Image 1 (spheres, chains in turn yellow, orange):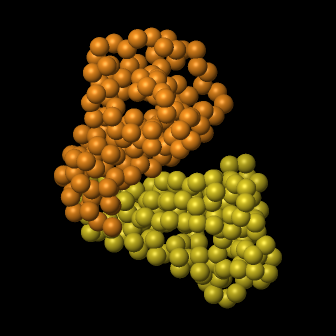
Image 2: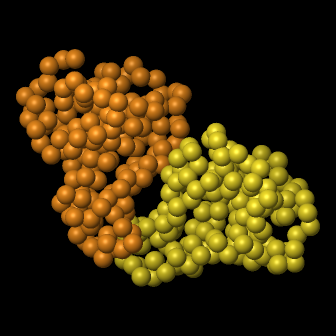
Image 3: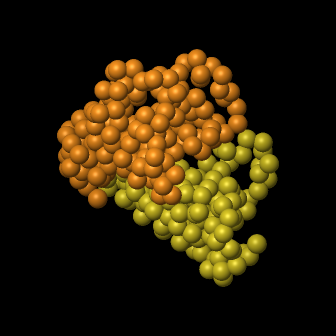
Length: 155
Length: 155
């Protein structure tokens, strides 16, 4: 594993990466990852452009990839919840060919509406870019909840 | 195939069964079902309580079942669209153990919020009951769109 850039070491200390790490550790029921560092736990989320070139686009995407996409959106939900106080949940609708739609729902509101493709090659160039992309969805979600608070609170 | 009850023959002529039949025929790209009657096309949707008892709950649900659940919700979307004029789309999030959540989205609105379980045994006692259950979701959707028209129209 290459050493983290200074900007990525900073990203590790900010809320998005912290939320993601909390989720990953919470899901590690067997304790298999107990001794892994934050950096090691987030390493699978980093896939550089050069690495992507070597990943074929046939076959079904690795189940671990779908798990990581879900973890990213659960962390996004977590930050939306923290900021707005309303519960948020992701729904993933991924086609086995590697593309799909992901929504974050708060009450009766679609707070975030995301489309993803080429999931075989899912990953980010670095942690700062992962945070940047995730925070765009967090912002979208918070904005939607504030725009339609009654819908976000509807059961 | 047992003969249809009079109430089911009536149901076949009403909008929900018609929408469902249109969808099934539209998806029959190879023409394999071209000669099937309406009754034959809807037969797989009917599973009586006695039949359900004999269907085991282990293993993954048959992919054909997931297809039928999706067709039901697409027909529900169709009726919501016809009534309200806004486009509706289902998202299925089915766990492989046979339970899951299904939402119908119109714009930024969760028009219908459904939870299903025991999908291994998916099916209705008869066509009238299928229509009755589906129309409850259609009503829920139309009501939600009318309650939050700006959210249903939001992109």
